[in-house]
Image (tube, rainbow, N blue to C red; front, side, top):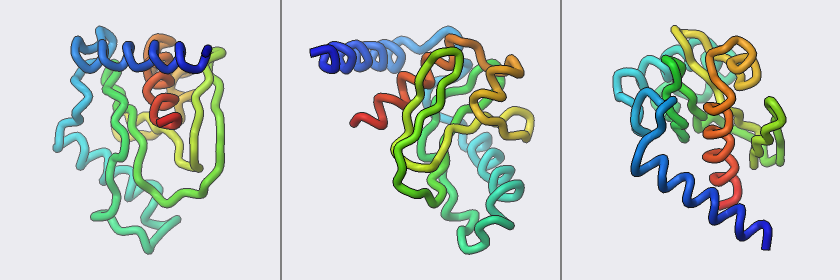
Length: 141
């Protein structure tokens, strides 16, 4: 029963966000193609090129775009991953994962983990809550 209520509340929240937008979010939930390519380029050159040379730039895609918050782009890539359940807790907010991929924050060409972005004031507690709602819904679908 609790799970059903939580799922309904999450669906309602997502519908409100998608239909009305979010005040802390600088853009709609569609990332500008120019920004997408820059984020992909930076990630490929900073992280994938050496660590996974068999994975080409053309294969790298943003699998989930969570939004742009105060100039910070929050995304997850389609990089190779291992099946494993994981969880991150930031400011007592639980964010669940179904595989080894993690949410990244891109700001001025630099990538941060969610915790570091929050501690560095790139993301607010409200941003973390919204990101957690989207991610936890995606994991449970």
